[in-house]
Length: 485
Image (tube, rainbow, N blue to C red):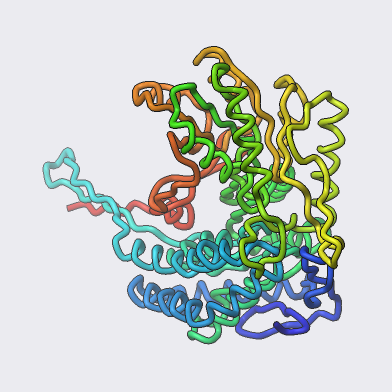
């Protein structure tokens, strides 16, 4: 990995003279330095993107554009080991997860949307007119223009490409700003764009922070036509205010406090296995992870014991070590946030089933950002740890006595990203799923995704939908053409 990660705009690499450190969360050591974009760099990226939209990139047909995006996917796969090493260095996540999910999906996103843009339909309607000659209406779709893509740190390559691929497939030029915590794979993606011949300005990259840095400079720039963001709700609110002055299109996938509802007739072993994944995957740092678990009373005690065993069987450690399935939190700041909720849970009277602290390794990992997988019981639904998104390997488990109670408690939240329901009663599964206030509801599974389906949240969990044509619908605008015959 390079000693300095640079910005990329108009097919040129840019250093600003101001840097920040990229830190390895496994042991707190510095991975590399990162050049922080200043106002001039952001302005240069916006201007380059505008030239691309109005130039070669904007004049390309769908087939030619799709062929280039497939080359991006091919080149990412050819550099698989580079992307893998960069993703692990930035996040500390297990090698098995990055190897089987993050890097393959990053490349696959470009192929998926390259294929979809070729099959993207327009509308056509014949109409009658008073003179009897008729008229023909048909729609065409045009790209939005310059799109700011702001990606999070938890699945940095996967979620960046999930936005960049459809935006570019639709003909937009993008300016990507990865999280300051995870800049490496985004920089590699810029290298790939240059290597395969993506026209100058169609893909640009700026590094930095949010307020007072690249994020704010980008979202407030008048030359940016649309903004897409995945991250916490508070940041989404700030971006929404910035976009309001020019009524820019926005697409937000924000936070969650996701519930699971487990009925006594569930397949118990499959449910415990599924919930262990739903709570602890990626150290709980997935927007779809479950932090509120409601279990029907007849199996409550048994379920708590079973999930406790799963939590205590998790192996924490280095990404490259065999058998490791749980890494550190992303940063010292985020670890401190999660630990503050550990303290708050104790203050609120929670019973700690397992965890509640930090592990000790006796080596340099003690300088990293690990926390213990943690389960609580005994709190009411008004407790802060049951209402605020923690984004760590934690959950609170509570009993319920009726279907109506479970639905009401699952919906008693300011968020609405996703939920899961566990029951072998098919009618109940359908019935309850329709009443859950969330953008995505699983029955007897978790994280099972068909990438053609709509994905997004309600309430504080977001605005808009991503996935398949739903992504393409956001990144392009329809215009109707009416021909009088």
